[in-house]
Image 1 (tube, one colour):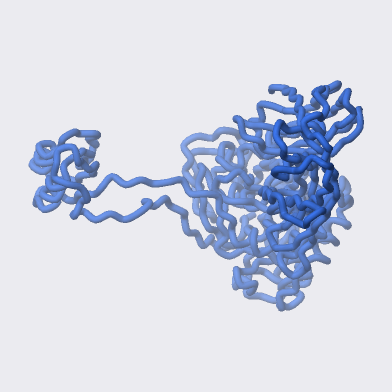
Image 2 (cartoon, one colour):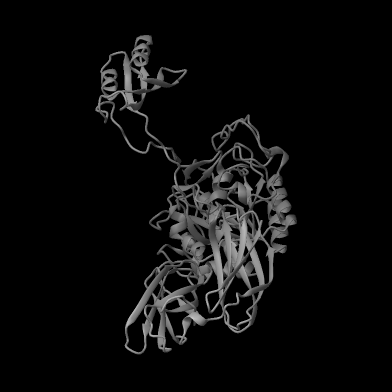
Length: 606
């Protein structure tokens, strides 16, 4: 059984220098202290001797005909004109590429779903293929248990085959390690981690399982493929992704598909690469239990190689698709193989959102698909739309939800001056996870004079804090002040709320007793991808002027998540849920503030 039936169109991603530098015209004066660091390529020993004589310092000599030296600019120019020297270049730098969002992730609005906090967390996806790189920088954290058929187990001595004869890895780190590239590429599209490295997958927090049923040459027998489907079903996986197929049906594979479907697994398969055609969907994609996926390009046109037919359920990007390959590599492949894992990752997202049942998941994907103008046998219900399948933002076609002011309160705070100070507790939220900024203003109600304005940057779905606002030179007669809060999101939508607070006639005589933390317990529910903590708290204040309670999650001294609750009276209790994608959280901090500005802090270290 071949994996797709046609060769991949592939373009490897290579590092490049940060900037081009000429061989001559080096910056800097002629003084001995003004040196440049250059790489010198030499033709012979005479060239090497010339470079050594010119060097103020030899940094490195290579086994090949080159060396790195520190040299005066004028001497570097002279070396560049030496006939025994091949080149002189400044010793520039290269940088690691930042994470890239492949066009398929953007086109299907998977990035919108991820920005809304949907990551596929808790869902298990089996990639039934050539294996998955066991140590890839942006896949390793998501890898769970794997399995390999005996005849398909990883090898470093591939005998060749329809997919090019393997990738020539020097060591197999597991039996299910990928010795071909194909499975790792599919895995990256489905679930490359959102960790700032490499590429982003459709569902970056799912658990991936390598089910290696195809050997290094990209082929596998019917019984091995059936055994892989069976093993995955027995593990209780949620989704099976199969970028493989044949022209003929297999009864034993069909039995395995029935076995998996009976256990509630959502099965996704590539339609095949036999196009152009009108009715040529391969097996197992054409099985009624399978979501069959055709391939489109960046313009939503049908890929010329894509199989089509009445069995096609969805279309997804599959032309020049950028994803992961062993070891820590990235490449562009084309095929319905590349379209399939987009849909598998989307199915995982739908399951993680709470949709249960194979049919319900399938219907959610089909009903949310975008009609891109292709025939039904080419696109099925349409091109995949991940965000719409989750009832989220459709990437710009629906109205942006406005943020909300959840709570706003203000209480007098004591000062040692004639100023009137107020501690303002606030909490804001945004359903789109798109918070941008909060602005607070303090206005004297007596004369309408604006006393102070404070702005704060916010992000995510919810934010809260206690902010001090001050009216300078208050006359101490208990004036009333209006506190107004306006929250905006990144799309410009806003919401406002206000409250009125009276200054105490003597703001220096506020409560002197600091609040007390009566209970502070932390439950740690972290996993390899997320740091999650629940803070259960109870506080009290003898002066009866509690103002706010805040919990903070810190990593390396940086606050990575915060939750705040406005409180009042002499006792209060509650719980805060904190989570971040930083797995290096070292401290949870609880802070309680009263109306007089007194503050009590406790921490828990991890």
